[in-house]
Amino acid sequence: MKLKKDFDISIFEHSDTAKRYGINNNVRIEHKENIKLLHTNMLKVQELLNGADIWITSGYRSEELNRKVGGSFNSAHKVGLACDFQLRKFRTLLPACLKLITSDLCIDQIICYDTFIHIAFYEKMRKEFIDKQTNVWNDADDLIIGY
Image (cartoon, rainbow, N blue to C red; front, side):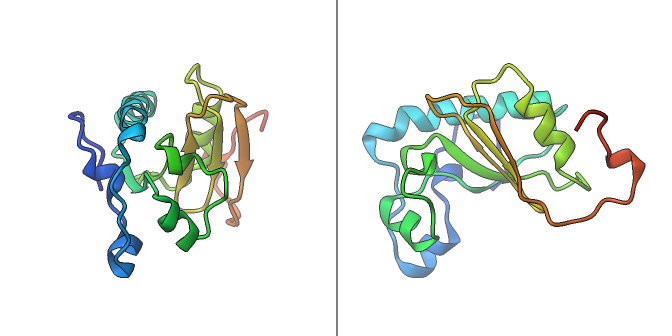
């Protein structure tokens, strides 16, 4: 679902997998403030990426949903502090990932995949960057000096 300026919890609760398997993915009350913080941080991400259209593909995950999708035991998705998102007008995601991980945002982790980015705003703030892309880049515009 497309990120909007006005807070809408359903953007972070939406899950095709949860619907398919009848899994309740409503945000628990103790995680609602985290979801609001996630929304605020994602608006900052959008600003850093020059107003890019951000599509949230996986936000909050209930314990049951996290197990179903094979999420990690300590996933920040389960407490509302992580999401996966797409930048549909970007040919490659590595430049965006590097811009975010080197920013002053309180980022714990970024994982850069071929078609989406995972970002976590967890209290650890490790600034961990993992590149899980499989594509090979042939265009010099995609290269970043120093990477």
